[in-house]
Image 1 (cartoon, rainbow, N blue to C red):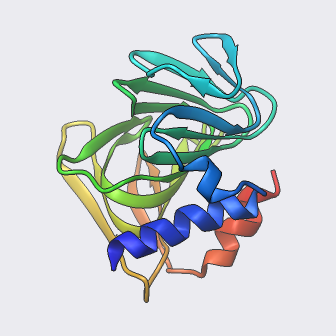
Image 2: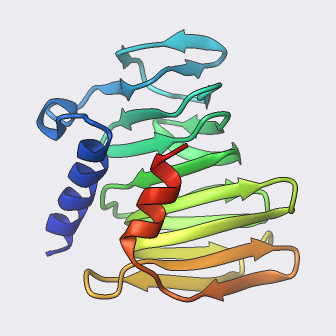
Image 3: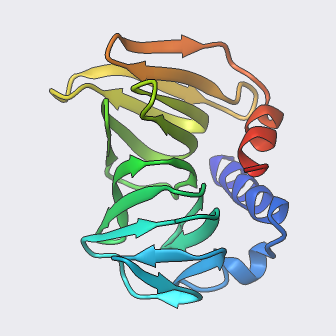
Amino acid sequence: MKRRIFCKTTASVLLSLGINPIFALSNTSNKVLLGEIFVNNKLVKGSFENLNNATIESKNSKAVLKVENDVFLIKANSKIKFISNKINEIIRGSLHGVFAKRQEELLIKIPKGTIGIRGTAIFLELDPYKNKSSLCNCFGYTVIYDFNGKLVKSLKNSKNDMHSAVVISDEGVHSINKFKHDIVKKEFLRG
């Protein structure tokens, strides 16, 4: 059941951007599906090599990329660090990611701590002006750790109770009510 939800979410994101999911996911190579990205300050279009200790930037437009079995919609002016084809740190900007199921938790550094992912869809937006991050666990299981590695919050959503949102700031992690998919879709895809 969870695999079906993952596939439907990934296909929905790609279709909403006018990308054929069959073409986009047909092989295992890393590729830019929409827009432009810069890998270590070099423009990349189409397929690209492994992201080992690489920084990607989306510059002035949003981009969609596939890295191994994960798919990312990255908003303009975002900067993300990858190690061994896995996101290691979100430095600035916004990301809507659909992560394949994994045995070991993927730890992603953010300015206010670390998030842990095993297979889920998330939306994350860093707001440097307000010194906070907004995280939506669209479905699946995501955890939030503080700087010392202490578990602060667990977010778990299924098909029936999608979208738990939190704000992460110096004051801690604050929950926001659960909401429908249309809010993320309308807000994220328009920019």
